[in-house]
Image: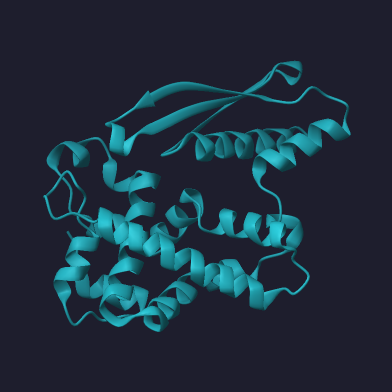
Length: 225
């Protein structure tokens, strides 16, 4: 595991209590004192910070659009991208089994750790410190934000694409559920039989897995065009 001082420099925050950061990067497979409670806290702070940033950034967004854009920005996929940019995987403490199966690079685990880090900053220094860290990491994404890109989620955009071409709507099917009850993983397929398209989405919830499958289907359609 890399020196945590490097991680602190990448997030732009130095912990007074280093144990908080250690816990934030500790997976449940490694120790009883893991990061899930901090993850819960960080998720709440992240939603508030990103929601406020969107509210201030674009006065033309309706409530529904704000909700959809925020959902896209705080989802597992986006968090995993942010986590990858600062190489969170290199700092994770995990059980040997998880390490061997590539758990450190699994998007869901990277996203959870990212939220836990935000939660740890909030727990130590409050909202303003957490907000500074979150906005520092999300600024490239927020700066390039446009209503056309993110105001509608993948399932909605896929539905509108198909409806606009008078094609049947996609079918979403859960093909696999794995993991313990408290940490389930879902595999969902997005099927468009008329176009001979079947894509797979993986996430920690059925809804997120369906969104990921729809996003992949949109990429397939884009490439065909």
